[in-house]
Image (tube, rainbow, N blue to C red; front, side, top):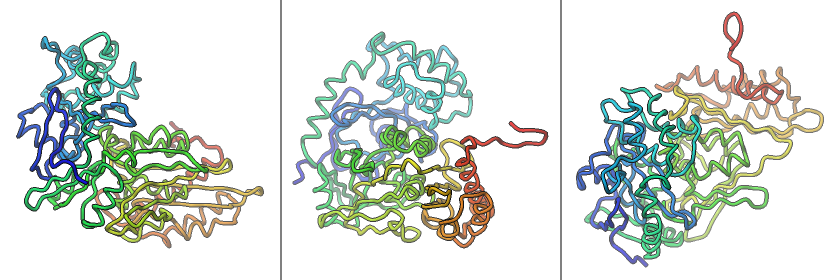
Length: 492
């Protein structure tokens, strides 16, 4: 039973309770227009530029963690039982700058200043969670922050300078209140679910999956929001109605990762950032893909379950999961059902999910000892860019070098993530040789009729899909994962 009609959260140093708000209201708009906290800026309104970056603290398995997020696509309804930290909160009681802020001053890391608060908050999140981060890790933390003026070198140097000071050495507003904040958020979470209804607007925050299933049975046309990295753009860019909304980001039951019976089960609410360690351990090639999904803020918000449920033909994780033979479990008040992930995608914009069902988890089988698996993403930018073509490849050979099992899955080649059935059939039972691979790759047109758009032409997509299969073959023969790029007069 619903126990509250208001959301409760902490903003910097105060407790906030709100009712009567729209499910479409973003954190950025509320901060700037209602609270006049204007340090967070709107640059893109789609989670790309990072000017709106704030930290959101939440309880994860009983532990308080802070993550950088994009306030421009984060809905207020998703903030119940969290601690929102903006750039205005960083200075000490005496007015001294935070070490990150001071380092940016010392290293001349700011010019026009528009993007600077976002850089500060991204680096602050890294500073809180990691001692002495490498340059590569600093750059990764800044993937979701864009600057047109300064160039990134002084900003990276500022991060390196700030790393020499830790919270134990200087005042830090989060460390100073961590115990109290943990207690406050625990109390809010324990106070049950929330339903806010204002005129035609409504949103629901369940405290259990049973409540979620019951609500969807009563309101089957509700929009389910986990990380809002897609739905946020429905509102900010497409002005789409999403009413009523169910916010599921606080459901602990959907945020578990467990290994059992030869498979890794990932809850639908597990974010890309949360999944990185487990996926990198069980499937290293898959783990290398996750840091290329959006920026750090997007990976802290977006979920693998959401990437599946959204059904985008260019979603990054479904092809890899399909190639690995993953299955998805859907839940409802009628009980769970499990389907092979490749069968979940029916047609463009259509998935095998009834209105009253929600994605509960995805199960990823272990890679067999004799199995080969690789995944490749092609995009205009290496980092924080949408896929043009993504290919995922699984292969198992029998004792005489013939193909015993093969799955080739692609994104960006059809209206859904899809396997190359004709190519697979041509290779099954055949010797795994370059001649056979090239002959089978020529059949790719039987499987796909890609479209041309601003990301890539149809010809480019078809050519690179074939080439990725060739690359996979070469890697199974001992070529390095990062293949040498041939140029006139030699190689580099």
